[in-house]
Structure formats: structure tokens, C-alpha cells
Length: 431
Ligand code: ATP
Ligand code: MG
Image (cartoon, rainbow, N blue to C red):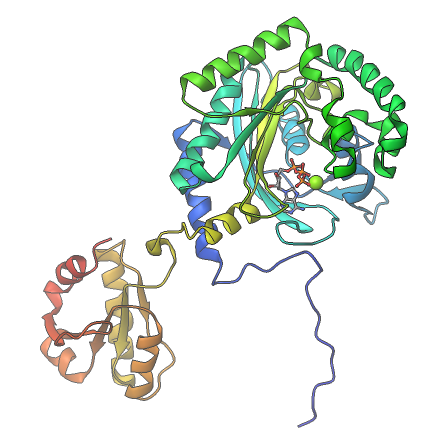
């Protein structure tokens, strides 16, 4: 046989396979999220992964990191410019408008799925990553801001993460208040031009608020002394923010007001928030969101107040793993390995497996497939992680019984009548 010389094709950098050893953690997270959304009365929406490029350029903002340098944009065969979605909010607004979901009604939506950004891959930062997000439409008051924050807080509590994350909060005020503040801020930065790094100089004309976000230690002192948006809020935004804080206080949700929290995207107004952790190194933001009252109109709809957030699943799963918070029961494996002792028992075993799956819907039963000697069958049973093997051979079939073998404890094997098997297994394997 000639040796294969074909070069193996590899996955794209920054885009990961989710392997069987990791998927139980993801499923644990996803199941918890899905149940929570259901309990809060949020409905799922699924949108295409590809959209017209103009959707993101118009909503996220031309001078943001995402649109400037992170989007996967290409021309399709018709010459239309398309983009793999870098986030979920713009698509959600587009879909809601297009399908009449915003007409004379409110909405509480959630979504989940892959997002694409051409960033430098590192721990907690990938080119294909996954988000869960919620978006609400038609609610003006701070109660919905509080509601989505409380939803996220409950998720942390149920995952065992609440004590490991911090809620940071800020208000960006109205568009007008922000414009006035922006002028003051630019004037201040002009006075300290020599301290600004290259990135910040570039942002001075395009997106000066983002300079506040900078982590450059050389600029820290100057940024700390910069005029604060919080001191330039319009009265209504001020009131909105005070009410939101009072609601969070009443719900016993701790938060830190961070006047420099501005978020990367153009469309936010009033409330912005982030949940951060120190347990993941520099990629510490696990959830981020806020209010974006102007976006629907900006995309051609009627003015519609909106609040939402998105969380990064990779970072959260990493956090669950780091802190060892995934319960053993969620980590996969099976309860029973059903094993025909030789090929003559194959059909009977297949039938018995199906019957047991009907009788015990919660049972995780793996059926031995692929034949082999009795010894190799028992080896497979051992590898399966199941605590119990159910053996079916000629004797058993003749007597209408099975043999139970206990694989992880010193315990006598046991014969059980077929019509008592479901009850016996039900007792042995109580979830
Ligand atoms: P960052 O400051 O970390 O770049 P961002 O402001 O760009 O985050 P958002 O657009 O607000 O992020 O997305 C919400 C969440 O999605 C983030 O808080 C993070 O948990 C996750 N996220 C964003 N980009 C990535 C990525 N490239 N890889 C993995 N997760 C990501
Ligand atoms: Mg980013």
C-alpha cells in the first residue's frame, strides 16, 4: 500500500471544534439558560448567520472595532456584500421589524448561536464564538432594565457563579446629552494630547468616548481626571438611572457604578452594564448589554425603546470548568451497559434495550454493538463508565431473566426476572 501524501486539512484558526469531552459542560449551560428563559417568559428567535453587510455597518457603527476590522465580509456569487454576523442585536432588530413583531406590541426575545469576528485568537477570544442574548422591545421604563439584569443574576446564581462575578453599571444618557458631553471630552483630550496613545489619537475624531475604555496604564491618571458622563446626564436619564439602582437595591443585587463604562458599540443610550470576573485573566467580561432606544428607528422602523444583553458562552463554560461547577450528573456517561454475551443474543438485546428505554425514559442505556469475544465485550462495558452491566446470554434468554453485574463496587452479581427488571434498575439508578 502506498503511503498517503495528501496534506491534512485543518480547521480555521480561532474556530474550534466542540469535542465530546467538552459538550456536557455546554449542554449543562445551555439547558440552564433555556429553562430560565422559559420561566421568565422570553421567546426564542433564530436568525440567519449571514446578513447584508449594510445591516451591521448601519447599526453597530462605522467607526467601531467590529465594523472597522473584525467582520467577515465577502461578496457572494451575485456580487452582494454579505457578512457573517458579528453579534446578534442587529439581526434581531431586522427580523423583528421585517416580521411585524414590533407593531403595537412588546417583545421579550432570546437567541443563541455562533458569532464571527476576525480578532487575534487567545484564551477566551475566538473568531467563531457563541453568544446567548436577550432583546426586549417596547418598554421605556427602568423596570425592564432591572428585569433583564435580574434574569442574568439568577442565571449566575443557578450556575453557582454569582459570587464570582461583579455587575458594573453606567448611564450614557440621551443622544443629545452625550453629544454635548462628547464636545467637553474632546476639548479635555486635546489639552492632554501628549498623553494619548496612537489608538486614542485616532479615536479622538471618530469615537472619543471609546478612549475612556482604554486599559493603557500610561493614560490611567489622565482618564481618571476626565470629565464624567455621569455629571452631564439629562434629567430624564438621571431619573431613569436612579430608579434602576433603587430596583436593584430592592432586589439585593450588588453593583458598582463605573463612570468609564461606555461599551464598544454606537447604539447604546442610558443604561449600560457588564458582568465581569477576575477568574479568567484579561478576557473578564462574560456578559454585556444595555439600552438602545434609537436603533430600531436607525434601521428604518418606528422609534422603539429596547434593552438587551449578550453573554459569551466560551468564557462562561471556561469559568464553570475553572471553578469546577458542573455537577457530576451533567457530565455525561451512562447508567447501564446492556451486553449480549454472544452474537446469538444480539437481536434479543436490541429488543430489550428498546423496551427498557420505553419503560424508563430517564435511564441512560448504552447497547453493546460490534460483536467481539465475551472478554472484549466486558472490557467495553468497563470503559463505558456505567456502574451496571446487564448481561443477556443463552441461559438468560431461556429463563427469561438477565444478569446484573456491578462494575464499580464489590457486589455479587444478581439474576433478575425480565418483568422485574425495570423496577430493579429504576431503584438502582435513581437520578
Ligand atoms: P471585548 O471587550 O472582550 O472584546 P466586546 O465588547 O467586543 O468584548 P460584546 O460585543 O459586548 O463584546 O459581546 C458580548 C460578550 O461576548 C462579551 O462580553 C464576551 O463574553 C463575548 N465575546 C465577544 N467577543 C468574543 C470573542 N472574540 N470570543 C469569545 N467571546 C467573545
Ligand atoms: Mg471586542
